[in-house]
Length: 451
Ligand SMILES: Nc1nc2c(ncn2[C@@H]2O[C@H](COP(=O)(O)OP(=O)(O)O)[C@@H](O)[C@H]2O)c(=O)[nH]1
Ligand SMILES: [Mg+2]
Image 1 (cartoon, rainbow, N blue to C red):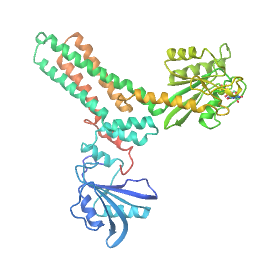
Image 2 (image 1 turned 45 degrees about the vertical axis):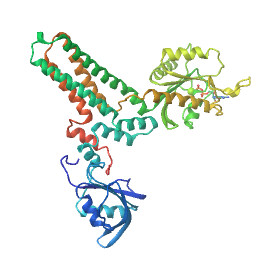
Image 3 (image 1 turned 90 degrees about the vertical axis):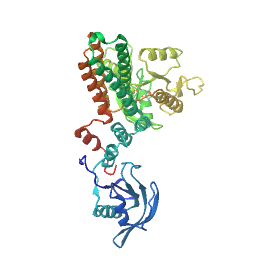
Image 4 (image 1 turned 30 degrees about the horizontal axis):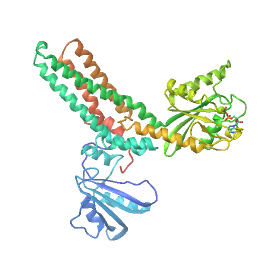
C-alpha cells in the first residue's frame, strides 16, 4: 500500500500488460512537466492544458518512439495534479523503456489505484464514487453498468451529503436543548425535530431496501422455467443456453434437481433456472423434494416462464394467479407448437413456441426484453449496490431509530446527540469524509496499476 501522505510524482503504464496497438503511460505530480521537458522533443513552450502534442521520446540522443502526449494541468486533471499521458506504440520494449526513462528522471512507479487515491485525496472523487468506479470496471452487463455510471456521477453521494446536512440541523437543535430544561423546550420544537428525524429515517430506509434490487442487477435477473413434467422446460433451457446442459428425455420427471446457468441476452444478464416438473398428485419423495425446490426458485426469481403444451383457455387465470400469489412477472408459453393440429399463428400472448425446433423464440425474447427494460425504467431511483455502504446505512438507521424511541420516553439531549453523532459517522464513512487506512487499502487495492 502507498503512503497516504506521499506527494511525489508517480508513473505507470495505464493500458493492459503486453503488446498492443498503442500503450498509454501516465505521469502525475509536480515533476510531470519537468520530466517531459527532458525526454520529449520538440521542446514545448506555453503548454496548454487538455491539448495533444505530437513528438518524439528520446533517451539522451537515442530516439525511442514517436508519440502523442496529452497535457492536463493541475487542478483540472483526474488526480488534481499535473498529469501527462503518453500514447506510444504498444511494443513491450518501448513501453518499458519510456517508463524507465520517466523513473530515471525522478518519478516513482505507482501502486495499484494510486492515481485514483490522489483523486480522492484531492477531493476530485469521494469514496462512494471511487467504489462506483471499481464497480464500473467490474460491471458485466447493461444493468450494473448503468447503475455504476449513475453512482459515479455522484447521485448517491449527493443524497448522503443532504442527509448529513439534515443530521447537522438536528444536532444544532439538540445543542440548543442542552442549555434548557425539559419543561422549557417547546412542543413545536420537538415536533419539528421528530419530523426531520423521520424524514431522514425514511430516506435511509429507501436506500437500504434498494440494496436487494442492486444485488439482482449485479447477479442477473433470475428466471424460473416451470410447468408440468415433459412440457419441454429443459429443451427450452438448453435452446436458450445454446448448449446441451440439461438432460432432455421423454420420460417425465427427468429433471429432479434444478439447474442454474447465466446467460446474456441483449446485454442483460439473466440467471436461468430449469426446474423439476410440477406434478399434482405425487407421493414420490424425490419428486416432492424437486417440487419444493421449484417453489423456492419461483420465490427467488423475478420472472417466471410458465410452460404448457395445450392451448389452454385458462391461461389468463394461471397468469393472474402467479402474478397475484407470487407477485412475479410471468411469461406464459405454449411449447411444442409444431405438434398442434390446428393452424397456428405465432403471437405474443400467449407465446407459441417450439423449443425443439426453435420456432417462435423471437416473440419470447421480445417479451423478456420488454419486462427487463421495464425493470430498468422503474428503477431509475437510487440504488445501493455495495455491501459496505449497505452495512453503514443499516448502522445509521438503527441509531436514528433509537433516537426516535428515546424521544418518546423523555428528552436527554446529551444521549440523543451521541446517537446522532454515531449515525453521522456511518454516513461519513460511506463517502469517505472519515476513513481508516484499512478500508482505504482494501478499496484501492482492487484497482489496477495505472488507475
Ligand atoms: N415435438 C416437440 N417435442 C418437444 C419440444 N420440446 C420438447 N420436446 C420433447 O418433449 C420431451 C420432454 O422434454 P423435456 O425438455 O425433457 O421436458 P421437461 O420435463 O419439461 O424438462 C422430449 O422428448 C423433448 O424432445 C417441441 O417443441 N416439440
Ligand atoms: Mg426437465
